[in-house]
Image 1 (spheres, helix red, strand yellow):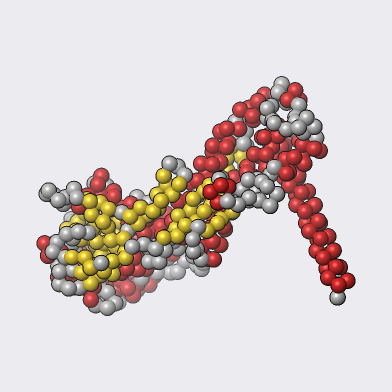
Image 2: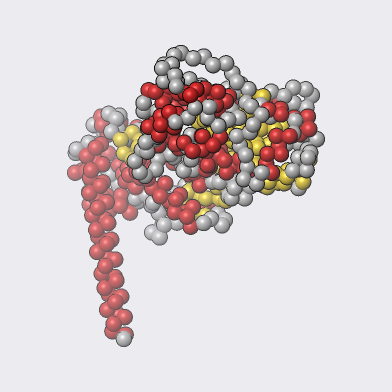
Length: 482
């Protein structure tokens, strides 16, 4: 038995040595390729000792580490996203415009820069002879660009912080910060061979939750709208959102008072369901973005039924829908989200007026969800596209085209055929649609339509519809139950 264990250890050691030799060989081949990008003569001037030193100084892979309880799925996502982005994003290597990806810069270019710089602090047998390169312009340009490359690398790595935290976060459960650091003191970890490591540190937070009681006694389960912000270009912090009601058009002595912003669980579910984004954190962040844009009057605010406010919700500069918002006495509350085609929106009302489409018609055709427009052929044909353009939905058309190649909205499968289905549906309906295609290309300038009293957004429990009974004045008498 002892002999068998000894043999196994020997086999394992032999395997590790073989892998190490192969790894070193692969690294040297890649080093030579990058040297050739800088100048064809560069690699040939490096001595074997210098090549060994560069290999020893090679950058360790960026590690994702958890600061708190973080699920395995979140860690896997952060690692994979970081790895992909380091391969995809590049920085300028030479003045001529040659580029390398972020991984190669950290792994190969940075130790190469340190080895061939004129003031390299190494032992005499390792220290390069500057006389070999300094007469050449390409060498001087490469060395002069060292600080620029390092700054660009650090900038790009820190730019990964917000996308990683945004894509992992979900206000219904946990939100995350993702802070890039090159400080081993902060994370207290090094590579096994002593090389400095770079880290992306993941930190979780459970958002604050409240039960909000409206004046009629109805209770809304809501979460504090909280985002992750980057401070001083590096550190990330969680920021609960508050804003004055003046952003939403309110006037008076209390309009500048800062109020915390809450969003109902129902609204978060509707945002995910109706927008169909692969990342809930992204569309939730846009709730904050769109609310704050109201301050600069860059978003439409429409007075809906029963005094409700419909606040325009944009994606990529195009109207995707509206948030139903109320200003209460002590909070601002986002009740729900309506896609631009829903009946309680101006555009949805025009679709109803022009085509007779009600809630059930839209659900049957699937046009109450953004994903339908992104993944179907409904905007491929002039006739079906113009139906929506005439109802004020041109931004929806523009947005759907923009999202067809967006990774956050991509999905497997072929584009499904909705245009013919919609034509057939219109033909089988009442006679009011007989002349619709004859007039389809007429220029129409519809007036702004106030949303009808019927609320498209009926909730599963039925209780949420009680909010329609509240006027703005009644809502100011609402109170919080902590």
